[in-house]
Amino acid sequence: MSLSDKTVTELRKLAKDNNIRLEQGIKKQDLIDTLEVYMKKVETQENVNTNVFDDEFFEPEGQDGLVGSTGDDEIQIEDNSPAIGSDEWHEYVMSHFKSNELIDGNPTCAGLRRVAEILLGEIVFSGPTQIFPATDPNGPGRATVVFTVEFNWMNSGMSKSFAEVADVWHGNTDDLFCAHPVATASTRAEGRALRKALKVRVLAAEELAKKDIVNVVQQSISTSGEYNPDDRISPQQVTFIDNKCKQLDINVVEFINIGAENYRSINDVKRESGKKMIRVLNEYQNQTTPIPEHVLSYQEDWRN
Image (cartoon, rainbow, N blue to C red; front, side, top):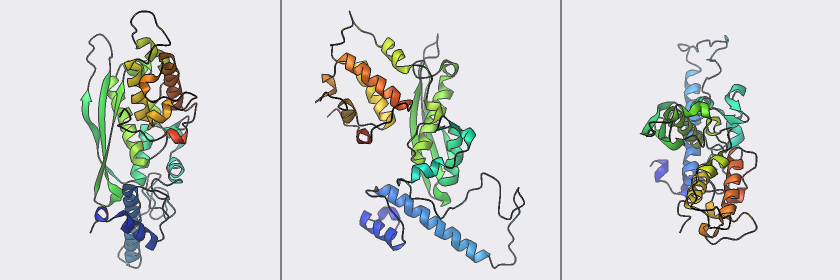
């Protein structure tokens, strides 16, 4: 019977029998991932013990002259690694990035790719699976890309895929990269897919922009007649808040009620308050303001 066929109770018992520490409230898939990592370690160690006394096998010297070393990017199984998704997991993953792979604490797509292969296994497929190019013939326009990354999960022979989507337009991307919207969107989507696979609580460096996204969005939102801050929130503002909350994994209902007002529906929010909410979301994305834990976990059916 495979791990996916077992119940959560059976999986927890298996983890307990092998002295595997689990995070409180861990989900079934994360539990399966943790057990697969452990089983892979055991299998690797058994292979090492089998060959260590065989005189016909000798380990090659690596680049630094040490037996078994193959350089900085060697994939190693670490016995002290925390469980995937545990409280210690994020810091553990971040410790693997080199200094030139971090921009203000945000990992680059190339760094995410390297670390993912170290911790999760070989990448067997990586590329855009859907492309919606810009249609504006007189400008860069908006481009959207769906990107998929497939792993040989923990180098076990089993595959596991992660997909994400990203869009690029002049309002969310620095001007230098707007000239190549499809390529930029592809890199952003790949970074999102990799950080989803690694389960890190940080945006990829390519997802951030230096320009004031809030002002660009506000200027792009058309209003009929004179602007009235007491009007209800516009559909464009609602769409922006929804998309940004989904990107940052924020519960929309919890977020709009983070202040003094108590809203039963987002349609009760005034337009001026909507502007402030968009500004806060921009601060969350740029990490100038921390995201409160109680507003995390995006819900697709939040409008119901």
